[in-house]
Image 1 (tube, rainbow, N blue to C red):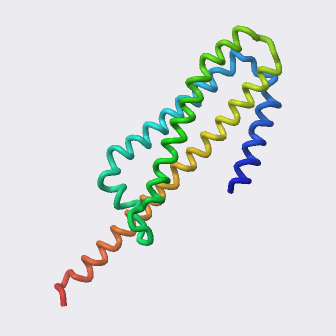
Image 2 (cartoon, rainbow, N blue to C red; image 1 turned 45 degrees about the vertical axis):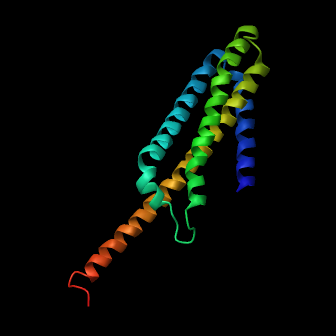
Length: 163
């Protein structure tokens, strides 16, 4: 899987570098802003999921029968938050750097290509983060559905009494 992400990440960077020559620096910053906004949303949603749902449902729902405390599944929930936080830090630091580059080299095609390449790489990172978000949601939904079905079956079996 790592090779898949490396190939598509490199392809994303190449496409960004290739097409970045025609996108002026002034026109590139709104793309970075949109990426920062989506990253903030993912970070907020996963943070809310941890804060609100984790104490009860998430702790039970992500606990696998084979894993005593669900440690590996907890890591799956925390990884999108950590990656979103890192991506937000990169984008926040990139803001002043981008403004400085735009003020000092306004018509440099190579800089336009490099910054759009960076944007495409960061966007691919965001796509990977979104995939990381979907995995714990699927695990939670599957385990919750199985537990609800088990409870319904148990109630149906014992509806006529134990015996």
